[in-house]
Length: 280
Ligand SMILES: [Zn+2]
Image (tube, rainbow, N blue to C red; front, side, top):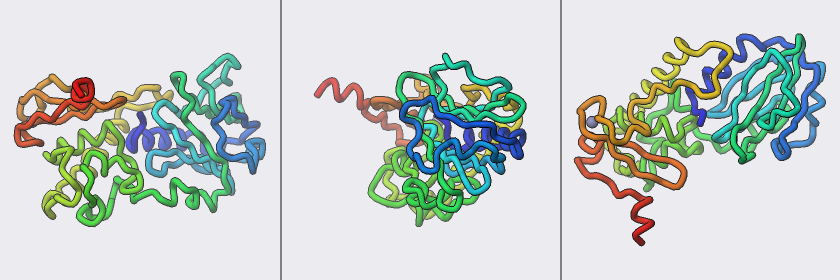
């Protein structure tokens, strides 16, 4: 699932090679991928890519005064190819055919078609419902967390809420909370000023370090699965890289929350939600 560092490295690499490329045609083989129909995708023909950037976890491809706003969901990937997609490529969702045979392609893996795209006039992209309600970027310089990460909700939920803070998902939230030595279940309102400051610092440092890692190891073609430098997420059962305690996890329907009991939950092992549901 691409989060801020994964989307940031992707747009950096794509922008470096595609800025200025002319569009020959654009089409959407994905059945339900386009969430707008006016202007139509065909409007992109003859235009140039003027920038590829990121808002939160979403890539934005600009073509002068039109922009494609892309929600990758969990399985979408934006990539550039030297050749056009085979019509048999069932993962193709949106194809932007460029000069010299290259193609900017939104692909999506798996059977779910969840990724979506909107083609919007550039000057109203930020009026889009999702962007208009989006919180400040988690990296590089979010506002103070004692004002931002508040509410009677657990940190694990608050930090992933794009309306609170933009860019963090299920992988990096575990890493950030582990670095900050905070319980995923601590409520935003219960953070002390020092904890809020530490959480902000670790958010910036963790996402920044991931991006530095990608800058070193990611080149074109960008792999579909990025080598995420994760220390704790999904590593339940392994020793904590800092204190050696066995990492524990809470399993939800479609994700897992990993933490170090010694350093994050005062030694308490939190209930496995999957298990407690079975026992109910
Ligand atoms: Zn530990």
